[in-house]
Image (cartoon, rainbow over all chains, first blue to last red; front, side, top):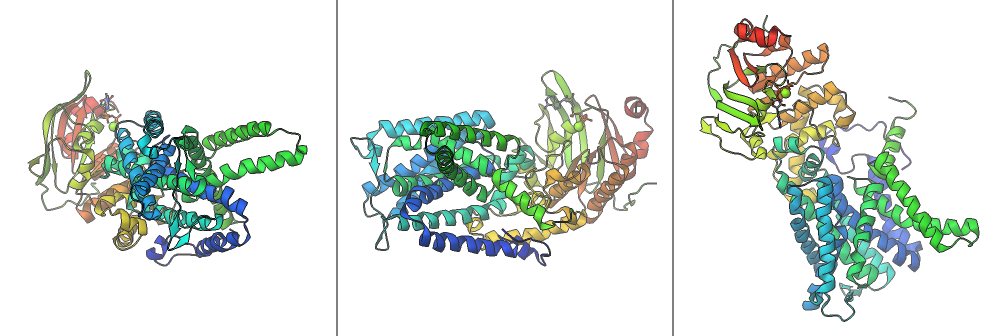
Length: 355
Length: 265
Ligand SMILES: Nc1ncnc2c1ncn2[C@@H]1O[C@H](COP(=O)(O)OP(=O)(O)OP(=O)(O)O)[C@@H](O)[C@H]1O
Ligand SMILES: [Mg+2]
């Protein structure tokens, strides 16, 4: 944002506690929301809405979910896509069994089921950490994918093994075109981001970060590690489940369990690493980066070489660029793009004076 | 010469009674038959050479280590095996020999986290930042600011603790322990690695906490000057055995202590 924060001193703790203590940040947030809710719908075409923005938002939500678990609570997970799958299949199944259920209720149910499964697979975190926990969550990934592939009940005995999302209507409006889908996903994602931001700066968020940063000290000041970790698994998986439901209903329409494979889990993990662990904006920056970079590379590739370069080569370059970025962020800036942004802002705040 | 006001109230009420603790790791005996009473309102120093078992003793008191033998009584009641996170609720707080701050948080957030157990957990209200969720954040922020003023760290409250110098980190860690308003405060080498000025500040804070809030303090310290100045009573450990227990002046003149500790240093 193009302003500096100098000269704003809080006169009460209440004001300092506000979600966005700096006045310009509030303006920027409002401007951002206006841009997303008004400007984009006015100017974006269907291709951008359906193929880029809606998937971007849905994956941002999944990244936000993983960020709660990994970024805030410090518990690593490779089962993100599995929890998304639970959300998608649970929403679908509820609506198939009880067609009268509104789709939003089904989404909520999907999130809750994912939360339950997440808590279950989070139980090993009470005993193991780091690498071993990552392996344990990998078990969730493979088990759930296998479950949905091999038990026809979950796909309602569809012969092709795929599920087709029922049509969505909200207050009499059919949500069937790119614009209405965009509004739906945007609203859900904005609300969730707001909730996560609030949690992060409250008692629960501090408990998560305490467990992440120094678990013995957290225990010594009375934080119950078990409850705190399982709550993180629950909230995180809820968001991932919701993202999975959106992915199935809004982005894909028809889904096979392989849409939620291990590659998806890694993709979301990379978003969180690149965007920034432990920050809400990081989830969006990471998702934006992961989705826009391939498009950029593609266009750049054909622009420079005049179309002589094969799409295959571009795909390879893409992998290499991602790899380089991930290594860069892991080594140089573990807090990702969000942190780089913040550093830039801090430097500007008092610029040109160093102190 | 003692910095401490000679309180007229005799400090005699025992709040923690530790009897006959045996603690070993594999074949290594860290504590052998140590008994110790902690009296309400006192500043008790535990001293001894490296590896004497001082930190182990603190870990037994704070429930992190469970001794193979021995009894710990808290306010007259026998304390059986207890989850480490329940110790804080009993009114016992501590700092660590190697700073154990929450590195990703600011000084203020570290201190606020110390007050977490005094808050109510309510997922929905915290998510919405409404009602209780908001009220308690604002209330506890006020209390945290009192601690910040007390420790004179106003200027660094928003700084991520990882960026603070060592002495300041130690101070923030003290603040985090104070935040939960403990009755018994355990400090594992609060002044280690500090320069003279920082040590003086820390001594002042320890004495002030003791006097203003009536907090009982058990501290481990290597600097004999500091120990003599601020403690009411000194316990000396050597190879896991308690070899002396009494006023600083008395302990200092005991031959066993001079041999084991003072003579060496
Ligand atoms: N968790 C543990 N596992 C194994 N051995 C331990 C453990 N904790 C302490 N010990 C051993 O117990 C003995 C006493 O250690 P302790 O840390 O209590 O000493 P200390 O008096 O605090 O020493 P220092 O002044 O170096 O801090 C040492 O020999 C130490 O190696
Ligand atoms: Mg020690």
